[in-house]
Length: 90
Picture 1 (cartoon, rainbow, N blue to C red):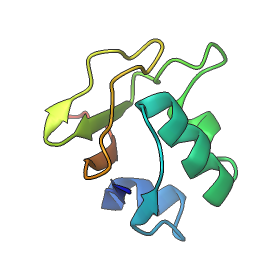
Picture 2: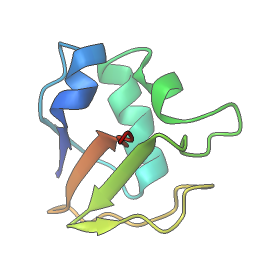
Picture 3: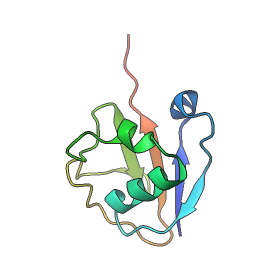
Picture 4: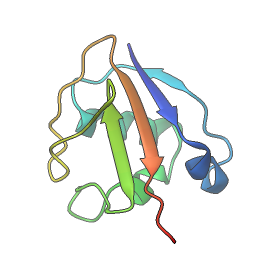
């Protein structure tokens, strides 16, 4: 199963977030499964076209995903995913 981790910045908006173990073949499926566990977070992660929002980054096995539009980056059963809010400021 894929391990899904969330950063502290996201837990500020969704305090109930905890590391998950889920089944998913790609990032798109992963977001669907995360939404089932934490209703409403999907709208925070993706826009109306189901593309990853600009303020969100997802890393799979330490690598930033390449497909932010259709979220087709593949996952393996032992993938480790980090979902984080992009931070800005100066």
